[in-house]
Length: 420
Ligand code: GLU
Image 1: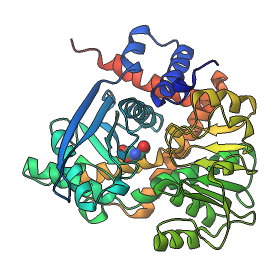
Image 2 (image 1 turned 90 degrees about the vertical axis):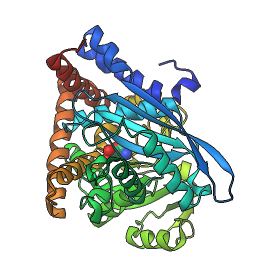
Image 3 (image 1 turned 180 degrees about the vertical axis):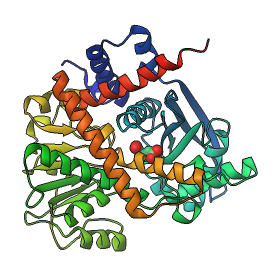
């Protein structure tokens, strides 16, 4: 595939490239193609914020609602200096496909604010969050669009969003966001759910390829919410986690890293670096190290035309959104790497968000075992559906997942008909 460098690293192009391949394979009706290829609504907000030193600063934020055909928009909000409209568009579309792959009644949306949380105080982050929520007041809601955490946002961010929305509504509306703290409408198991999904999907991949958990060597890139929970759950389940890569350094131990000790180390020091139970290792080089399972759980564009041919993993489980570029897809396919795409591999998070939304609306909260059991049912079924689709249509898992998702969303649009 000849794609220019810029194009390769633009997440929107990456999404559109896969969409086009899958839509073509499906013989998707031209009109539906046009509807689904672009987002439904894109909102840009400029947030005036008084900083701690008294200065006024203006931050730019986005919320893109790609589709609400199957239900309210659903998707996280990220805070990062790199946020841009094309990225948020791609992430919003991925949410549409993700929710359709796991067959939960949501459309797809995503939000972001251009800011560097490392340089902001908690008070400044709270102000940005509240003003962002207020600017979006008529566009979000339990039946409209339900935000959640993503990169650099967390339970506290969701508590502030929920509170701001509720103040405007003059009543407590817990179901407006998911990923909240437990005592204000959060769900048991939500925090670990994306990582647990990575474990469940890896287990299913192993079964499919006739491999065992014990001794299977895993490298996880990223040690944030997704990577740390995935690594910890995999370690506890008997996998040998030999490498962890973070933005400020990586770790490697061929005999396996004690992930519980590493989690404690990070809690104490704020970083994985300096951990005694493993050797320091270049993070980028870890992606190319010898292993069975590689789980990129950090950010976009880490497996690209520059390194895909050097990857030695047999299985790639995409805990992050968009970690592989569409050019790298072809290289990995030639190498027969078993890739489980983001829209399935990291769908555990939004699936548990769905459970949280259901619980909030019922006012009845489930035990953690119930959440985990329901999560496993959904992900195991979805994995089976995607692999079946891939075998029936002779396509890789990613295109199969897109095809399954596009087919479901297109069917809904046809059934509902157009209001015009
Ligand atoms: N931000 C997560 C994702 O990319 C979770 C979204 C949600 O729970 O709504 O899937």
